Length: 342
Ligand SMILES: O=C(O)CCC(=O)C(=O)O
Ligand SMILES: [Fe+2]
Image (cartoon, rainbow, N blue to C red; front, side):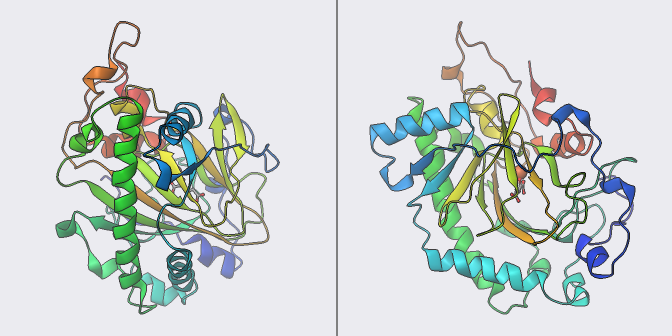
């Protein structure tokens, strides 16, 4: 990546030291409407993962993914105590002294580690959040030096959580295929042997100007699916539907499943990868954990042949290394998926 050096300070450090934040954080793009903390609450479908063998639940899944592109998953099999543990180790990490966190600092041009997104362009609007990004799979690319040993249980808990997330991912991709009357492994096969899983712990410090600064710019994810553990009490995520913004409610114990661009491509646009953004607030920190599931790097993905017909022409080209296309588009405020349309 063409990043020369890591220049951005952790947002948390600016806040703790009372530093006046630079103008780069001010959100100016008029394309996605204004920042509105009082947008209506989204009626995002709630889906019982344990009942996906049932036709009714499968129909609900298809309907959720063709309309919102996301749903709240309940009965997903991860017990509440594990959700609490993974939240707790994330919280403890972000509350370590800055010097301690900096031991895991991201390196220039790389993705893993503690810090912020890469700055690739002049005038890039910066996001009001810090993050700890850790690639979990494929295993031979894992960089354990970025995995905190403080708190001591961090690694073991993340391993356990990631294993459970992968089971959910597999079940979801199969159910999505079945809901479209496709062979159940048709999406999974496209993902390849070395499909990827990355954990991103997001930390949004309180922000003095929530009216004009975003935690995360509007974007859709580059994934097959993203499995998001929301903050247990602080709202902030908004999702766009029919060009309007909606607040995503917190459902205790649920995981928010977001379709990413890769499934939108494979499903020939039937399943929607929703644009979403994170707002900030002036009072409370907010913490979320996004588990990004994606196909093997270098493996071509494309719309499933059975989903292309006279009524539904092919919408997307075959694409390799979608992630690269994605980062550049995202930081320019564009949607990457537009670049692979026919
Ligand atoms: O923190 C959130 O609520 C959203 C996170 C997100 O969209 C992402 O990490 O891609
Ligand atoms: Fe996202």
